[in-house]
Image 1 (cartoon, helix red, strand yellow):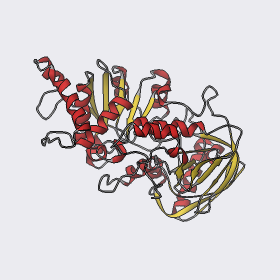
Image 2: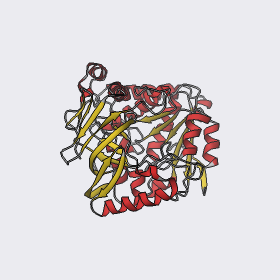
Image 3: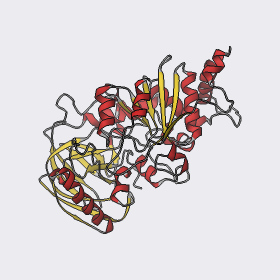
Image 4: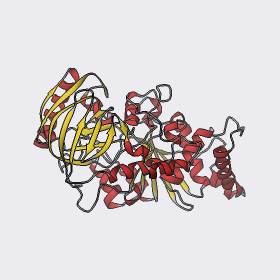
Length: 426
């Protein structure tokens, strides 16, 4: 940890809480009214210091429906410094500044923490200074690409077991991303899509997956790996709260055999495998009885083989297990290059699109000697996926987008981005 800085200033040089202490108690309510006006009035004029209407809508959704910020709460807003200067932890000061002001407008008490952390392969850290900052707050809004509950066991245990602190992972980390249709889509809507999709996952049923790229897999849906949990769970039942919402709970697979072909993967691990998250030549996996038998393709396949061989030395045979599948749930999860120049980050967003279905390549558990989870994925975009007699995906379209419960939630948000019409094939 090279350094942590507390950034407690606005462009005016004063925090909102300082303004209130100086006798400007109406400021916070005024900012809340400003956000409400931006939501409803299509003709509001603002100044250079103001928040664009689109971003204000997104931030209100983040804080009210994602983080559920309450008056009096202490809220840690975490960002990594390298992301300001071309690092993987994409962020900008304007987005953090806007979110800080909006937290204060709700009567909560933000602490902005800029972390400068060296990121080394197989040595990822949950720094003590960040842990201490989380200890003194009630809620965390995390803007880091590197510090995530999926990969880093110590961080997951702190969030979900030791402290059980609500931790919102805000994927919309820049002013530009906050202004996209992806970020303006109501969290309540995407959460309902996730829940309704998970209701269709029933253990004991046979499943089948095909794709125009030649993929064909069959198997059996197994019970959820946590025996105390079912597949259909609301996010509010846990501590990890991604915003915008992104994937359906993982489906445990049994008796799985066939061929899986993919041309992209989630970008957290692709950088350590040594490939771009979008491939020049697809990778072909041969699967028998939940086991990867062969890996074929071009340079990407060779890199994956080498990576899994290295991980085999760390974690054993389970790196070749093939026993998990799930999918994105957000119908607007796509952004243009001009909105997000980072290819790693665009792939991260696209991974959550409702047309994106992915498998886990390997299924090893973290160990005391290797306290990380190799969350390597293979992603497809035009799949037809059935569980029993239920069609889950139809050529890339998630069928619950047309369900009555989902449509009912969408109807409550006229004028906001919603369900979309066609799958995103990318």
